[in-house]
Image (tube, rainbow, N blue to C red; front, side, top):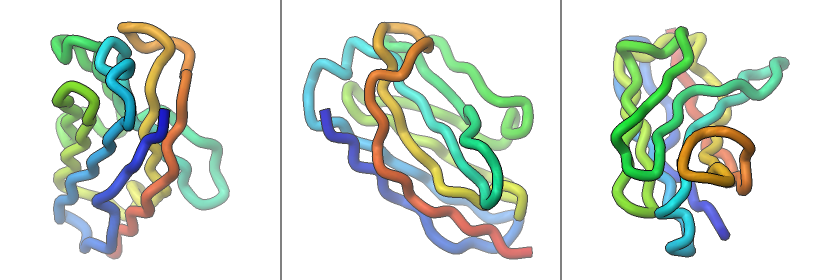
Length: 117
């Protein structure tokens, strides 16, 4: 499974970006998908996940109310609003091993998001 993420860039604080990630194989349509991020000098952290049907989502406390995860079959999206400089990071999409979030099966390459103050 190859995961292709896109949509990163430079944005001012308070702005919005939409990240997209497409899987190359249909098997990911039966798996939960998610987004993680790694800020400079920090460990990679969970951002959001969505189950295989798209009916259940979960968010890190730091992004609740600002970010929205959604999916369309083998594509997953992350709508990021009210961005803050603390959101600056490389964002990674991921496919979980099963229909709900748990162990990661596949990682995508990262896309850089930079939020200026």
